[in-house]
Every structure is written in C-alpha cells, then in structure tokens.
Length: 294
Image 1: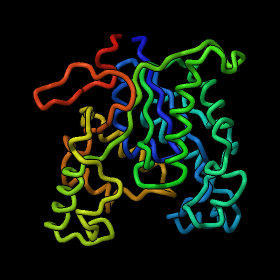
Image 2 (image 1 turned 90 degrees about the vertical axis):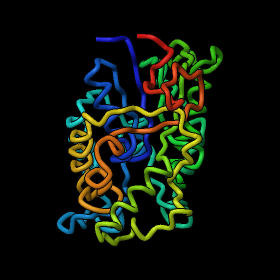
Image 3 (image 1 turned 120 degrees about the horizontal axis):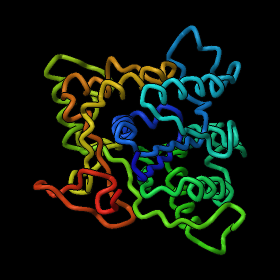
Image 4 (image 1 turned 120 degrees about the vertical axis):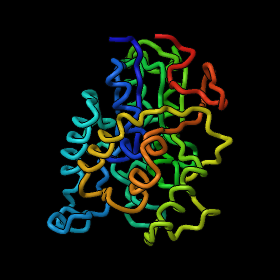
C-alpha cells in the first residue's frame, strides 16, 4: 500500500465515471487511497428508465435517494471504498440548469454560500491530506451550474485548508501539492464523431458541430494523460450502474467501442496548481502523482 492519496470532487453521481472512472480504478489497484466527494445527489436528473420515471423531481422527488444506491454500485465496480456526499446526504441540492426553477431554490448547490460549502470540503481535505485533487475547469466542463460551483468550492477549499487561521476545529492544515481539471481533448472527440458517422450512426452526438463542442478542450491545454485502458471495462461497468442517467450503448459513450480502449480509456487533465512532473516524448505527464513521490 502506497502513501499516495487522491481526492476527486464531482457534482453529481455518474460524473465521476465519465471523465475519471478508469483513472480511479487504476489508482485503486495500485494501492492509492482514492476518495470521492460528490456535491449533490443529482435530484434534478432526467430519468431514462420508464419504470422509475416516478422518481423524478416533478413527481415523487425521490431520485436523489435512488442515485445513492447507483453511486454505491458504481464505486463497487471501481473498487473505491471511500466515497462521500459533501456535507452529508441532501445537504446541497442539484441546481438544474440556469434559467430553470430548481436553479432558484435557496437550497440548491449553485445558490449556496461559497464559504459554507467550502468549509465542508476543507474538513475532508484536512482529514484525507491528498497530494492530488481533481475537479472541473472554471466552465465546469460544459457549463452546468453545479460543475462550476464544484470548481469554485474545490479551489476555495484547497486555499482555506492550507490556512492556519481558518477553522482550526476542522483539523490540521494541509497544502495540496497538485490540483487538476478534467479535460476531453478536442481531437479525440472529433475523431470519435467521425468514426461514428463513418458507421452510419446518426444521433444528437454525431450531429454536433465539430467547431462548437462546449465540453471539448483544446489539445494544447492538456498537460496530463493517464493511460488507464486496462481499466476501461470497469469504467463502463460503473457507468452502467448509473442506469437512471446513462445509456452506454450510444452517443458519447459509443466512443469506447468505436475509437478504442486506448483513446477512451486514456483520461486527460489540465494541471491547475502545482508543478508538472517528468514529461514523455509527446510533452505530457503520464501520472497525476508525477514529481511528488510515493
């Protein structure tokens, strides 16, 4: 067992699998302590299973409770045993999208005072003492309010966790050496769209304009790529556990079958805090812990 510790901060159950699932499984198998913090229960998610449609927020409003079971099943697939809900179950509610009624709720994550949410994460950071923290970029990957808020909360909490004057009751200070943002390289997304089109697949994903991919990151901004293709099957199994939210047989997730494990199983990041470790011949880092030591 190494003394390396990785903390990931995601907005909703299932987000952790999409961009970081293979990375999580890889590091678990390498003996790294992997901790996941999920900021909301995803109460406002669209329910893809007709037999569970009654769970939706405009009906029984019980989706959040159900998604906790999906999250637990997904973590079992990845081998992650330390997964937490920020502030406890239901502390911060899924905000929905900007301009929708859920986004105006005072208990939504988006409307939560930044210091209130950050203090909850500070306690986790000081307890876990991670060398590496992973979250979203300042656009939240694609603009979802909860993703943007997760980015803000994470960076604020990282700063506060290192401050000896902030809430000593939350534990001893800890200065996180490296913070990364998740990234989907534009070239890989475009290659995937073209591969699907070549097979005659037409859907919402293949219809996207290659010049307007809000979740794609310019390749030049990617600093780190973790080759976790051997763990792609575990990632896809974990995604399937989020059955109310994810269908892995088409759209974006069809990339796994059409672009290949090397492309879809390699997960990409941008270093936001800290110093890059050794780079390979392609000029990218291959390990989130590079330069830190174990």
